[in-house]
Image (cartoon, rainbow, N blue to C red):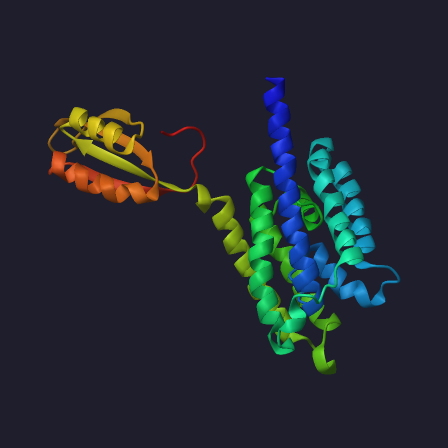
Length: 294
């Protein structure tokens, strides 16, 4: 049992490392060179970089560790230990990249007029993949996540809303710091930043939740044995059986419940009609399946 727990912990650490690496790459090679602010600690770094006497990674260490200590007092030790690794790992990756790579190495071959657009698309995918991986192992990436969880706990604001609220505030403020051509307000960067946050949330939701989605079939039939045999033999899924009764006729029937992959629903629908043309069947989208459902 202890060996299983250690293995699970190591896998969790590995996935967090991959997730944080993807987020760091998105920031260093796309957000920082294009000066596209998408919220979070990275957005603060981009805004404050011109005023810093040291590299942005040092500021990230300061911000992350400060927020981590605040989280320790306000959210408890359990949250602190879950967040500590990612909070230190993220600026470490940025520091390594600062010492080894030119941040413009990718975007310098792109027309500067398209930097916002390219950065928005690529960083959305990379950051969403990183966040989604961390969320799927029930981890957090630290930084602004700590502020969001504090707001949820003490201000009773839903976590889904605090995620957008903090990012939107940082993006809107960034328009005063990043002003191309000495304009009054950097509206273009703000618009791209807001779109990026929306894309990011959509992709994270897909990776963290919809990637686990399935279909659940509810089959009310007078031929349950033949129907179960078909499901066992054809798509090799388990079945839950319930006794039901028609509200109008009073006839007793059996309802079979089966969770299956999306592509298996088409096979199942055809076979149900072949076995019992009077069967009443409906299927629902199941957002997430936890456990063994074969």
